[in-house]
Length: 228
Image (tube, rainbow, N blue to C red; front, side, top):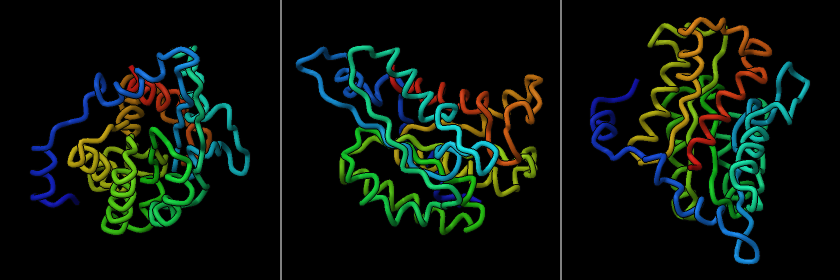
């Protein structure tokens, strides 16, 4: 659970504004040749951004990194955009933080998305927080913008129970984004909203813990919203 002091600090911190958070970068993305440059976006995390649907099948072109790339290419047709996936199936944030410098920062990204909370249930809140903080610190030193993601659903979880680990880890990611004034895509909240609106969760999933194309579209749309 989030401590009272951490929660108070998070609530006091300024929330990242989608209208301005990536304004400098989107200005670059609206620049025409020959004055433009390549924009690098890295999607870091586990099997979901890696594109696993029904394991072991990988659907790269139906997963949110590719869908984000498509959306940005359409929105910024004069921009050269690389979306680089450094996600590894089965990985948690401790493992991801250990290779963050070599596999992510070394690619000179402009923006990095981090999506580990689904698998972080296996290591617990404290260890996950430390790993996320390490990645946030490294990105800050490299002047890299971050977009943090809450987990996509697991159909075996009790999504209506605040004490279920998936909800606790989602809360921790929200608090990290708030306390560090970072961009947030609340994937879990998006799925819950669709379910509350009448869409069965199974219609958004390809297997118990992996979204299908429709589920990935929810995440990609929310990511694209950070690029006005």
